[in-house]
Length: 292
Image (cartoon, rainbow, N blue to C red; front, top):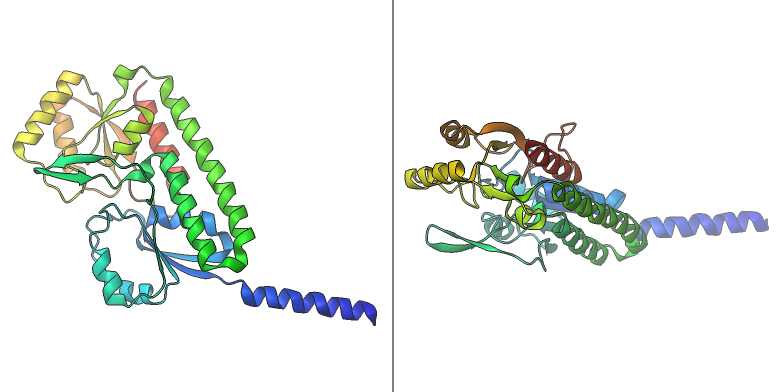
């Protein structure tokens, strides 16, 4: 009789815990944030990304379906820093009532001059140290939205954060073995500013921070001149962009193709870059191997 009472108490306790714990419905603006949120939240989150694998977060156009997704979300995670120019309209239209999290909060940003304007570079996640900050911000927001699961969220979140810190150290070591003069590459658009600063690699690109920006003939000519003068030997295409312009510049300079990089969109499931960590490691390895 006593044992039955104990078992019943345990069962009721577990039921009460289950009633309090919940699966958060989280919408993220693009695939990289989606993966970071999934890793931090584990089984306590159901994550949907508005801009999917191989999608361009700069030029995305939301639909009525996206508005309905936001309406039902408990938490929406965005990058901020001007990346998602379409987001404010979407949040307003959707009637979203949950918690909006800006993952880049606290990042030390940098700016560039573009068409006579000063613009903030939004691609902060391309430094793994910034990826750690993103994960910390997301973890704090998930705990706030689901305090009943704080212990489990902290366990999965801190484990993931430790992996990202280790990945940052690995990237620094990977590049430190390469002479500085060889650390120069050509990409389609200016998405690697934070990567370049963190790991001392110089990137050149015909398009600016947004893939929507158009390079003028004069800018392209000046870039070709600079590439020849600096002896840049390798160019890369980006999975979310049309490579025609960068190919044209490469053929004018004799630079060789170095492969495909994933600066702001993951590959489709099962691809070489279907998580943030895999995409980052792929980018580091591909760029470093091209400098040998």
